[in-house]
Image (cartoon, rainbow, N blue to C red; front, side):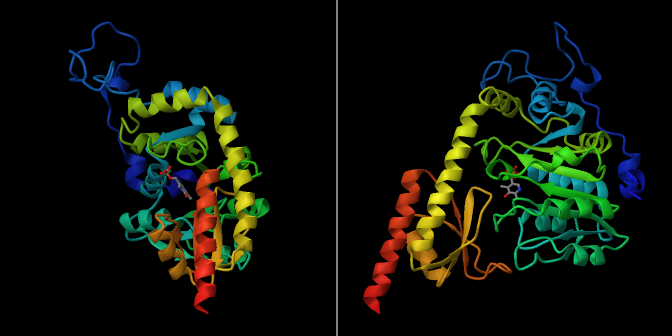
Length: 355
Ligand SMILES: *Cc1c(COP(=O)(O)O)cnc(C)c1O
């Protein structure tokens, strides 16, 4: 049985959160002398002398409309990396508890575990880059608090089988975190629709990829009201700057623009998959539901260095389990992608000439 109270750390259960000026007085006043701000103004722009809304109420209202979910089921953080770290701090007793990750996958899950001194059990993806549910279930101990699933997965690019994720959440008494950083590039629906049936599910999304705001640092977690309440309780009170909140509110006014870019990235991805298949130095291109392609090169190291010399940088994933010899290539603009293909064709012709 999933029991949130039993699952969380005892110190978190007992925690009395910091009470900020902006949480002790909620409302509109004319004179604010409660937060030791600079009353004269700010060199950073109008209003920047004031602390931001710690509850991000306006932002969550709009996000709730967009995601068709109650705003009290949304946590907004300084990138999804903040949400990941908070989940460790809520649920995992350092030096005692464990989490399960399914490599090859996003590196932050392990780093966050290491920072929090939480043991990581690895259950590799299957040969087809899918979840090995039976082995995951066998690897769960009474100290396993979190299972991280990335779908579409970084760096393999594929979505995980929907029924496997549901099965996992149903059969595990801890928290299943489904990271949907790349969901916008896939044809799949968000797992957030399953929250009604799965009280132990946490869905992560980010404004860093499709939304084009990696520099702004905004990520969100969607979960039950009780889990979100816990995340809000332990977050730094002012974790999202006014600049970041405003930037997202502005972006949300024009979702069509994002949809157009996303559609273009998907179109480019399919064009690139084909073009890359035709080069000799790339032996295989994995199917992708994200804005990148995982490709197998016959000499990943040489291709990587050649591209660097051409001032093109891709991600070398060749030392990663199940990705031996692989490079991860982000989809760029049409002309950037053409430049990459031209460079790979040049690599091929130099190689041919030297044989
Ligand atoms: C890029 C990425 C993120 C985004 O993290 P932010 O902190 O929101 O920028 C999250 N998860 C995965 C799998 C990613 O690849």
